[in-house]
Length: 141
Image (tube, rainbow, N blue to C red; front, side):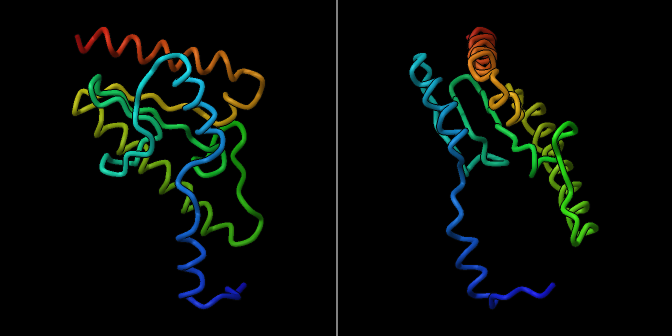
C-alpha cells in the first residue's frame, strides 16, 4: 500500500513522536519516589537508555513488547510481513550490539519487558530495578 503522505509530511509527523512512554514515566516516578536520582533518555549514550545513573555506570532499558519482538507477546502485522520481520530482527540485533557495548565498557545493563510492568507486577518489577541499582552501587564503590 502506498503512503498517503508526501515524504515531507511523513518526516514531520514522525519527528513529533515522543521518545518516551507513559510507562517509562511511571517507572521513573516510582524510582524517584524511592530516592533514586538519574537521567532519562540520555541520547548521548548508545541506544538512548531510558534510565541512566552515570556515577554507578547503570543503564536501564524498558523494552516494548511490540518493537523489541517479545517472545511472549510480540506480533507481526499481517500486511507487509517481510518488512516487519526484517525490522524486528534488526531491532533485536541492535539491542544485542548495545548490550555487548555496555558489557565491554563494564556498565551494568538491565532490560525490562513492558509486560513485566503491566501484568500486575509493577511494584515487583520496580523493586527488581531498585535492587539492580543497589547492587551496581556496591560494585562501583
